[in-house]
Length: 100
Image (tube, rainbow, N blue to C red; front, side):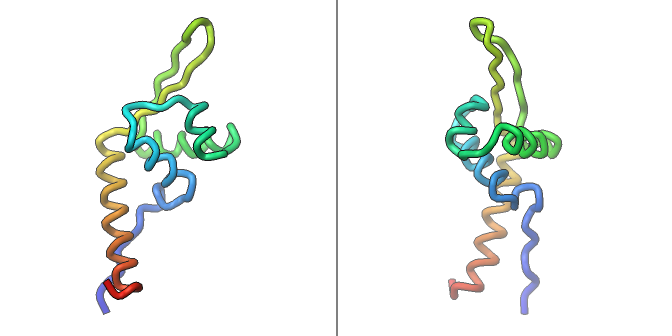
């Protein structure tokens, strides 16, 4: 039996995978947009984005626009590579299960 691929535990969380998937399709995204797309609470969203930032997968920019705080998130190249590697590993894992 071939060795099973490892799934990146940072990405494997449902919300973190959703966040990286959303960020992979845009240049940058506001916190409020990510919250609306995922349906997450502010606290959970912030915690998961922090984990992605600590892993080097996203960058965060905080600024003020018309005196209102705005937080922007961007996916890094390391984040793109990690997401691509995750998808490849998942396809390998599922390929054996579904008779690729």
